[in-house]
Structures are given as structure tokens and as C-alpha cells.
Amino acid sequence: MPAESHLLNAAKWISIAAGLAALFYLLSVFYIYLASEAVIERRYTLPSSLIKASQEVGAATRGERIMKIAGCFGCHGDDLMGRTLHHGEFAIRSSNLRALVQPYTDGDFERAIRRGLTPDARAMWVMPSASYAYMHDKDVEDVIAYIRSLPRKGAPMSRPVFNWKTRRAIVAGTFVPSSPNADQILMPNDEGPRFDGGRYLATTACSACHGGDLTGSGGSPDLDVGASYTREQFFNLMRLGYARDHRPLKVMGPLAKSRFHILFDYEIDALYSYLVARKTLPPVPKPVPTSPIK
Image (cartoon, rainbow, N blue to C red):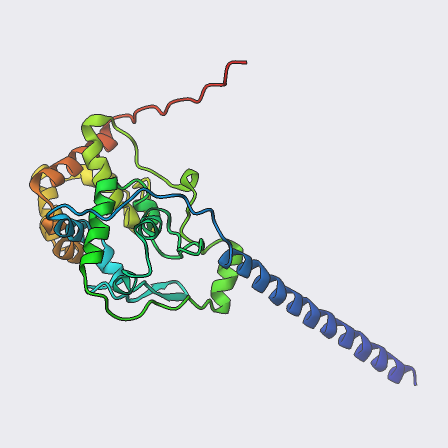
């Protein structure tokens, strides 16, 4: 009997432990779902917009060129009708821009480009809006003019579906939506007005891969490497995708062919000059906020 009693007690405690483990699992599942859903469903303040699609002659042509350099076709497809993008365990279909011509206002497009926000105030997930947050008004207006010049085609993409691994990454903070907060946007060093053109090009064309401050991201190197090229070698890098030893580069080769070969000489020259300055010169000190006079 004592042996049977011990077995019954052991079975009882095993059952209790199993029940507690199942309860803990269900609570953790419940928590992860609710916590991730709070991030997914969060609404942000939609800033007002004064942007209007440019009506100038040649605006659409300029907008197409800006989109090529900025890499928009790489994410949205050659026809801008969207394509599947992979981010770790998460796969998302980029927007069909040609289906948004009618439902989106110019302000909606501007907020999507610069802030990564949808018209219903949700944050987008893989839109590199931080790279375009400070895109010049004229460039944004030309981009919208180009999108509106295209015939409407296809249907808008449905909202993304988040699998369990993605939800866990959201809760862990390893997968976050495009940040609409200006104070979270990294910017490359300011080397003064002489290098503003190159800095602007680096921000809008390079930072999505190399990080907002150009120090490298996701396997892409710190763009200090650009200063190790001679000016001639750097032109070959941007136009042909060649390394210093004339070896075709696996990543820059296709990018040069699809995007950077259309850069004007003065644009490549400005980018190179900025990267050299970024490597060799101290950045311009940021202004220190002063306390208000009491």
C-alpha cells in the first residue's frame, strides 16, 4: 500500500506540474499574441502635408529616375505592382503602387514615403522610410507625379499576415515596423555645406542597405570603404559594380546595372567627395540646445 500511495502522489504531482506547464504555455501564447497585436494595430499621428504632385514638364521623367536611384523598383518590382520581400521568417508583399493612384492622395503618398505610414495611420513594416524622411519636397513631388502618370493596374495588396515566429520577434523587439519617429532616424555625419549634395545622395540611395549613419547594416560594410577607392575606381564601382581590383562585386554589380549607372558624373563625384570627407574630416558639431531664459 505505501508503494501504491507514493505512486499516486507522484502521479498527482506530475499531473499538477503538467497542468501548470500547459497553463504557463497558454498564458505565454496569449501574451505574445496580445503584445504583438498591440504593435501591429498601433495608430500614429498623421502629420499634415502640403505636398502636391508636380505638374511641371518632365516631372514624371525625373520622378522615375529618382525612384530608380533610390531603389523603389527593387522592392516594388519593375512594373511597380509589388513583389514578395523576405525579412527573416517574415514574408510580405510590397504595395502595388499602380493600384494606389486613385485611393491615395498626394499627402498619403508623401506620408508613406517619408514616414512609413498608411492612410489609416498604421506603420508600414519593411518600407525604408527613414532613408527618405528628409527627401527634398521637389523630389517627392516628382516621384508622386511619376506614379500618377502610370495607368492604374491590379488591386491593392491585402494587409500582411503575421505568423507565430514573426509575432515572437515583434514582442522581442527584433522585428519592428518602419519608424515614423524623427528622433529615431539615424543620419550620416554632416560635413558641412560643401558636401551636402553627396550626403543627400548617400542618405536617399545608400542608407537603406548601409544603415542610416552609413556604418554598415545586415552584412553591408561601413561606407568608410568608399574612401579607400581612387576617384576613378569609385566611378567604376558605381557605374560597373567593380571592386578596386576590377573584380565584379556580387551585390554592387547588379545594383550598378539597375540603379547607379544612371547617376550623372557630378553626382558620383559629390558622393565620393562626401565619403572621403566622412572618413577624413570631423563632423560639423551639432548645435547644443540652450535652456530658455527664465
